[in-house]
Image (tube, rainbow, N blue to C red; front, side, top):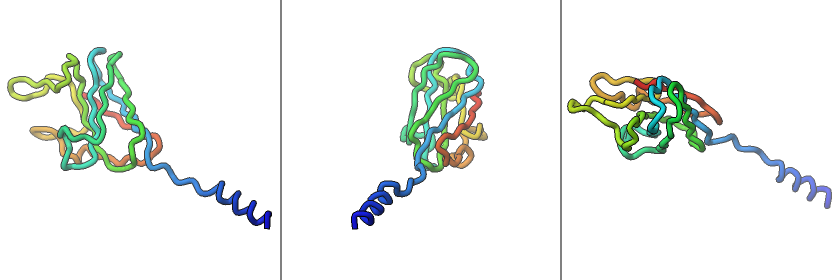
Length: 141
């Protein structure tokens, strides 16, 4: 009887390991011209909120070098996402535009999506996130 109890106890302790359901998204941002300001990055989980102030996750990352900057989004649940970002070069916390509403600061989207006469659609920037560690690259313009 004690032997059976011990066997069942050991089986309960070993159990099964559930596969991970979240991971780290690593975003490599290319073409950073200035080593000042911040990268303001937003992760969107659906089309309804894409490019609104309702983000799934947002990150402000200090820029310490020009060229390539890497930003990590930890503990991101697996799913479909789109990323938008801009380099807030003057560190004023907003995306500066000129009098015609054209961007004055570098920006980019996942999949390097570019809209025609405006920003891209969620479907153009969306990607599947499904690995414990996954990397995407965005070239800012």
